[in-house]
Image (cartoon, rainbow, N blue to C red; front, top):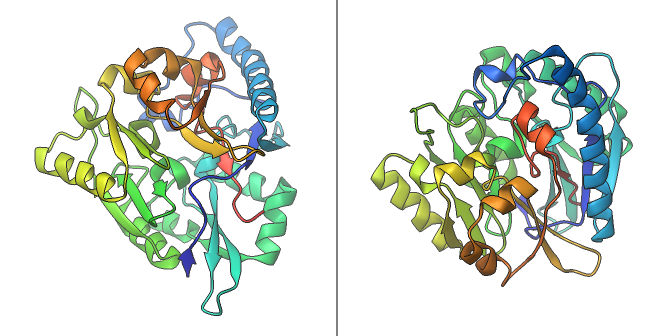
Length: 320
């Protein structure tokens, strides 16, 4: 099958939190998470997260994005359900007969409570239930038995137009699962290694880099091997992307965690958090705004406790 979808969609799914909190299981390899210093502060996180989530959804809708909101449930306890893009992805495909279809991919997850999150999401979402009944389902969850993971579009940053997946290896992103995914979806892939300043592997590719229609935003400093770094730049440029480097400091402010969408007027939007936007230089913003309009929600409580940002909260719905 060949993915013939454009780079962007205007339909997304988001999960409204009910027990959002610092996830002890994922903190083992997510250095972006920060635990509250007191019980009182921890109790306030859920209230703040709901307010930020609702404002984010409203902002997207005001800008012409169709948002399906799934309300999370208290049980089982799934503190990271606000980040559904790790559990599944959707892809427009073309069969040998030329007919367009859609594939739903379900991913193996690192943390046990995130595996429960995936089960709940697939069971409760009307859209995903329809897709599971009507489309091709690629279920990669069997890799969990071997302790191997690939966490959706957290692990994979996609150039959908050229069918290339970019992935930095980590405990959340396994090369064998990636190869399986690429074979079944008809993608090529580029694997690299990304480390923070202390030499720890960055947990997800989508905090290192973003790929849009014309621009790629990448923390090149995190790719320590010079040859590998140049190969990454060359591959992005071969896909027609202008590479915009960001610093470690900007990466830690989630400047790599962006997503390009288009709205109901076919206008290209670049979604990033206020934290990410404020970290960019005036020159970087001006360059990006030549191609897209920036939409930036304020989600500081979610970023701090969850270790994920604006892109992580959006699961794209292609083929719907």
